[in-house]
Structure formats: structure tokens, C-alpha cells
Image (cartoon, rainbow, N blue to C red; front, side, top):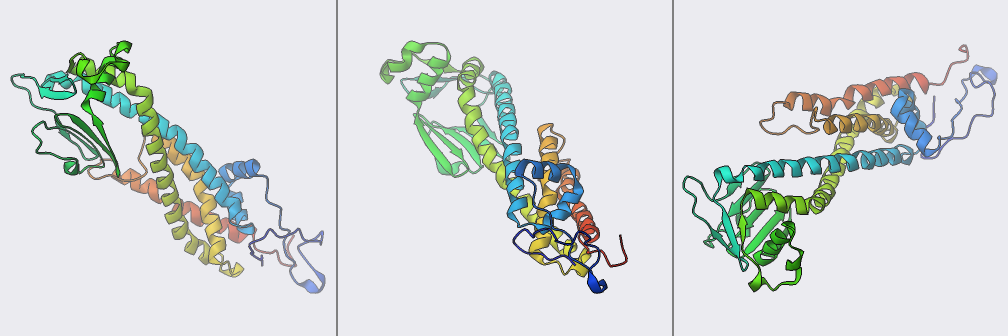
Length: 326
């Protein structure tokens, strides 16, 4: 029976580990962990490596998992940040069809008349946009994770718990810079030309701010992805470990060792999950009212059968051969 410890075990001295004097089984040779990138490749492509991970300290599987999560999260965050900005550009292109134009003059916002159209207000499950120049609304009225409130002379933004306040004179200057008027950079606010807020000016502003928006959104989405993948890996490892222990009762496998196998299984699944999300086939977490909830739940629980398979591989590969076996 294999011994499990927190240190790599040296290879057995006996060249024939299948037998010892007196017919007692011998300890199987304990290989030295491969170097990081070779170990990572084996964990991605060779299921037997999941079982063999039980022989090494936890850091030898935790390191590759953290590395893969970071590698997957970066392009995923940048990709979806760009998609979000594209969605915003498409939305502002429809602004003139539904909403009244606005005027920025000396940092003060007014609503222009437009029969049949309404003042800008959007309230979606994840974000909300409000324009209120009456002073009745405050930043406390932004209840969604992301929100924007424009008042008579200030712009309030909210991203989760982070909040920012901008004077509308600065926003007016951004509109002018986006239109290509670089001379407005140092002009006093009370001398800035008026800006009409409509589909055309909003498109120019988004194009001007696109690199900064993608960078800011990428950082936020990167953190969200890291937390999401880490949480998924932790929950699945905890659920996989008891099944791996049951399949390896003959090895008296401790819980900490079974968790090494569970963690190893998650490494290729994080890659597959990231690719599926990148190409918009599925989302890691089900969302209320989403038609793909069943598929998302199936993928969320996919590590369980793979973890049990890895436990079965461990029961075959880590059991010490008896004296009569070759």
C-alpha cells in the first residue's frame, strides 16, 4: 500500500519493487514530480497524472491550477470587455429613436424637447442608467451592480462597491475632445462650446474612450473570472474528495490526498470551461431566466464523474503489487 505524505518520496532501492524477501509486498517507486510546465502538460493531457498527483505535496497541483486560471481569465476578460463595448456602441446608435436629446452647456445638463420620446432611463438586471435633473434622485438610488446617474451638473458612476463622481463640465470636455477638438483641453469650463448629447456624439465619445473602457472592464472581469474559477474548483474539489477516498479504502487514503486528485482534475476542466465561454457556448454559472441553465448546471457538475474516474485510476495505479504479480 502506498504511503502518502507532504513530501515527495524517494524511489525504492529494490529494482524489483513487486516483491521482497519473505513474500511481503514492497513499496512502489515514488517518482520525482516533473518540472512545472511538463507537469502542467501531463495534467492537461494525461488522466493518469491526476491519480499520480496523490503522491506529491499539494503545491504541485495547486500551482498549475492557479497558473491555468490566470492564463484562461486574461483573454476571457479582454474578449468580453470588447464585446461589452460593442454592445454599448450598438445601444447608443439607437438612442435617437427612443430618447430625448440633451444639452451640455457650461457643465449644466438640460433636456431638449422631442415629441414622443422619453428621458433616458434603463433598468436591466445587471446595470441601470438614469438621467434626473430635478434633484430627486441620488447615487443611493442606483441598486444594480453597475449604474450611472446624470444629474443637473454631476455624473455618478457605480461599479460594485466602487463609486465615482465627475462634474459634467469634465464630461462636456470629453465630448469635445472625442469630436476632435483638441484645443478644448485647457479651455475654462465656462467657455466650453455647447454639446448636444445624441447618437452621434455618444458614438464619438465611446470611440474616444474605448481603450480606457476596455482596460477598466478587463480588470474587473479578470477579477470576477479568477474568483469564479477558484470558487468552482474549491467546491468541486471538496465534493470529489470523499468519493476518491471511498474508491481508495484499501490505500487508507487521507482526505488531504484525495483533495490533490480533485484539484488535479479541475486543471483541464478550467481550460475547457474557458474555451466554451470564449466562444459563447455556455456560461459557468446559471443565471435567472436563462434558457441554458440546464447545460450550465451539467457543465458545473462535470468534474464529479471525472473526479471519480481519477479516484478509480488511483486505486489501480497506486495499489502496491502483490508478490505474485508482475
